Amino acid sequence: MGYVRGLRCRECGAEYPPTKLVVCDACFGPLEVRYEIEAVKEAFTRDALAHRPEDLWRYHELLPVFDEASRVDLQPGYTPLRRAENLAEALGLREVWVKDDTVNPTYSFKDRPVAVAIAKAREWGLPAVGCASTGNLAAATAAAAAKARLPCYVFASAHLEPTKLLLPRLYGATVVPVDGTYDDANRVALIAADRRGWGFVNINLRPYYAEGSKTLLFETWEQLGFELPDVVVVPMGSGLLLTAVDKAIHELRDLGQVDDGQTRIVGSQPEGCAPIVRGFEARDGRPQPVKRPATIAESLAIGDPASGFEAIQIMRRTRGFADAPQDEQILEGQRLLARNEGVFAEPAGGTTVATLRRAVEDGRIDRGERVVLLITGNGLKAPAVWNGVLPELTPVAPDPVAVDRFLGGEIHG
Amino acid sequence: MVKLVLASPIATATRGEREISLEFEGTVGQLFDEVTKRYGDGFHARIFDGDGALKRFVNVYVNGEDTRYLSGLETRVPRDATVDLLPAIAGG
Image (tube, rainbow over the protein chains, first blue to last red):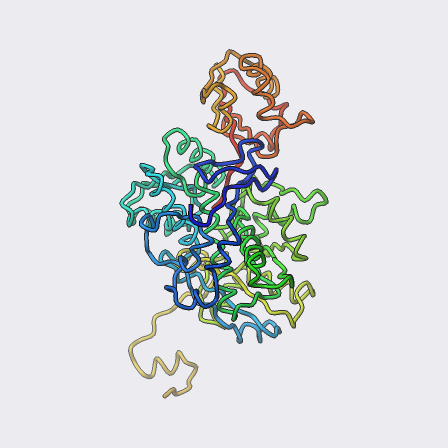
């Protein structure tokens, strides 16, 4: 079983062996993977890391895959951590970094959790895989399934951005276009996976799937010279990524790799679908489900987020906060990132940038804090949000005079 | 006939039956009372907490509509409805 000790319920603490269990057998709470930390400590050293391949398997002691041969290697992970001096200057901050997951194999961070989940599906010899998706997961699951030669079934809203429905089909998956929201697709996907014995990465492989997302934080730590930032801003759909970031920090702490200095974990959702943010603001700390999400940030449009309650607890415990920018601010966030750093993020990335901007303006983030933004998806997957935002291009005649006129009379070059 | 659809983790309390048909009309709460009569108190204990509320990670849908947006356990179940009883798992 490698370094894995077992599964533990995040809600009631019940422990189980690392099997195909989906949720806690006692309370249906979410399960998380626990490791033999003392054994991991021996192997997971900075010297050892320095000699490993630059992909997410470099942290294999803290990933729950037992059989190396079951990995499907599209080489996700070890994406750039970019020093964002221009963005920092534009926003009036001392130090901002962009963890750029737009460059993963299928252009989003979802390649990370999928790598672990597909490896588990292969270990267990499952006949097919799939997912319920707001878009990015669909492509990631379909691509990994193609490489693994496994049939793949993707459940998504039929009303999703065309690119996000196109990609999984190109990778050979069967797309089930559900006439409803993501939450509708998730409900029928759950029943389909349950009935057929398929491995749905974010449903019945979820405890293992979640582990892959920790590598975003492990890499950030390594790329910052084995340090953690003061603040990390995380986009939230289901809230699972935020819980993975927190778990990764805890594991590094348990291993003695970082001290107890606290990283504030900040979560960001679009105002048009902000069940976790509204729950953070409410006294009872319970997510407030949204029946009909209405936002351009479709990859975050989960109205009933399964990890919302945990995410709220984590943001409160780490003295972070939750924030919900409006769609216009999200577009402006995308534009700021593109124009200052040359990184074109999808609206989810614009959401985190917008939260940073809003929080610097109202003092929730101090200008002296070292901030890392998780940029989790590529803007080319959601180009339609720019329709009508930029002015139309009018053709210019292939003629130097016309060019000079277009450029305002100035002679260039 | 009302059709009750259960996910496997919950169906351990219905002898593994994942689809149950019942002649029934009433509320969601009354439907679960009927199922408890048929399968025993273990079913009740499986989905309710000690305070008589549904466990936090249990979701109920009547004809695809989440009952939290309707009237919870007081939601009406029409004669030919499909009721889904599922653990809460969602992640994009």
